[in-house]
Length: 265
Length: 265
Image 1 (cartoon, each protein chain N blue to C red):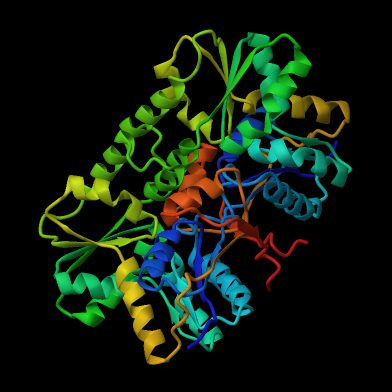
Image 2: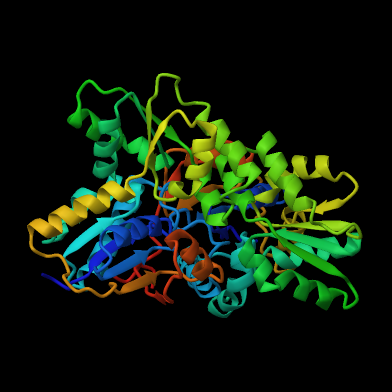
């Protein structure tokens, strides 16, 4: 039994879709979320910069003595997970392995939609081929979708047209698609409308089950029967943040707290 | 006569449209450009964060002993110009005053297209009303256009549709439109196609004339008859940067040099 928090890190506020999934599976856990909104997006940036940003976030979050860390950003998971694990004495989970495992159960060939950096990292094809060496994969960069999701254009004809253009590039053999970016779940209704025949996999739910298993094995679940506390730390707060955070979180977001990551090291 | 460089600062590489205009007007000047590509975009971020980023850039660029600084980003001009001027002993020019002065000559009512942060700053209406207290203005945030321009979708039906949606909000009384973001000049062919009846004002050319006047008055023009050197400093270099930089610059871009702004202060 542990009341220590789960810390969740993302490049911005898209990772709140992961917080939503974790809170559904583990409602009694205390969660501290950190969104690097002063430097969002990560998906257009280089490997070295993304790794540095992830390590700065990890350094800050360690100060809360967490029992587990989730990197709720595919791009940061792709480049920052191994260095973060070296830095931390508690479990550090990314979103990629959970998504890959879940997709693999539905069967291939599997397509992965992600940011340009996530696709360039080749991390999904690598993880999937470790799970199943004969699986076929196809990765597709969809760089405009983060901007559209952050704009709040979730049900919009233009967003649908852009999604349609990206999705038209998915080969006809594909059976399963991984949403390889934590912003994309909010666009799932559009994706399903365009290709209802595909299985669309979001890593939020499988990741939450994995977190529950790990904490359960370590006897580290919070046995309180009160809803866990949720704190939102951000590196920049613009006027729309509070409203948009509630939208991604699926419930009214607590007031955000402003912090600076540049000075961490 | 001075061979000292003109330093030009932008949130990313959109400001290379300003470099192009300056090099056309002042081909013999040495230019050092700094694009904060590790933290781009600025237009979605808060006033305090934008000001800090601008001051860090200014601190770094002072080390080159420039004769003049241009803030080639409307958002950074809106929030960072006054603090930068306090920090510098040489002229610091933004893009806003030049654009406003040029637009004012064409006559109002004037619309301003910009990022959310630039529009929220009210800087264009304020400057325009100082130039002409009776002028009517209308400011419109077009937040997706930076992403589309950086994506390279400059002549694309989806970009045109998004532009059409934004531009449809311009009131019918408007005569002149200021491109209040250094990314937008690359979308000018689309804007003109949608509304050929409007005067579209880009601050690049009027700003360059102003720079020429100031340096001329200070007898600080470079009288060399060799094409000036151009250095490109960036805070992050992804795989597409070099190609995209050439596109914005309108000529093959020199190899970029990577620097870190976070440690400046």
